Image (cartoon, rainbow, N blue to C red; front, side):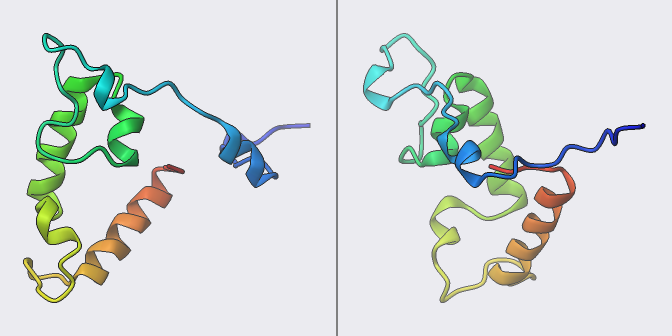
Length: 103
């Protein structure tokens, strides 16, 4: 009997919802520590990556260059790229699915 090497999510959604990772709260950052929230308010994706502060900063610099600046993400009345917000989200969702990103 061979087993597939492809990952599949747990059958119960409660397993995914109840799994918690350690995070670094904004109020716990010491003055000498790198700040994982330098230009943005701490939203869930910041918190998920907060234990490696340098990666948070690098990730969001790249995110703004390839996706949209933070202020433009929720500005649905204006389009800032040749692609619409909906088209960008469709591409991002497809790539996340292909990469098996279940964040």
